[in-house]
Image (cartoon, rainbow, N blue to C red; front, side):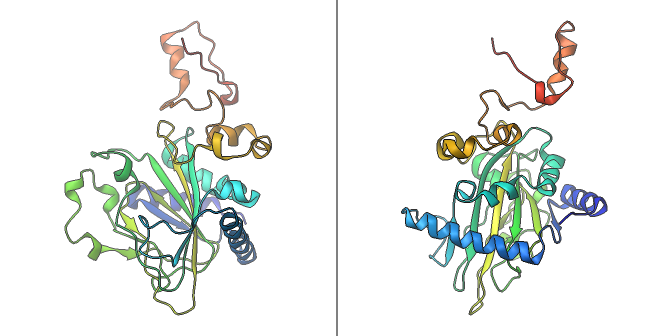
Length: 281
């Protein structure tokens, strides 16, 4: 489904101010249901080859079903991670240069409990957290609400720059992200959050987490090693760059390479980004 430019611009403004935004109906109900079915198939495939869907250091019990390496398991997830709406939201925060760090799923089944409170940037960077260097695009494959384990966040925590700003009663400040199947929720890396507890008797809550980062951050997954060559060979140049598969694709660039033309006026700076090459001396 296409999302109107007005909705996208409103979401960008909300994301910039509050650290998150919800965009409704990026997938229709049928597409969300198909993605959910494909997710369970991916989980079965992962389990068949011995991959654990429960990591004790993440979740208190196995009622949270984690599925890793989604892009390896099904082409559909390679399409979703590159969805135009998701990419536009990512670029609005991280700029033109970014990396796809990971794409995973968390299915909160009845009886699942919350993981530890955290922000994504606080895990990998010491404070101060002056800038946004990571972004999650969360795909709702089921309706999501507090009772079935919606992700919870602390409003205003995207403004916290130092760890000492996290108050002792932080868990009491959590509120749920709620949405319908097919919605996406975009959350920047400075927002403090956790998974919710699923207190329903028979209702799953299925979310996909597309994790994008600034190009100088180490990716959570080494896609060169993880994606089989036959899959890598099917990817277009842009996706290869986002996954860090090109030898000089991103190289940790934090600004526009055209600035080099100021320092080296005789240098030929490409007009088309696709032509950009960087020589390392």
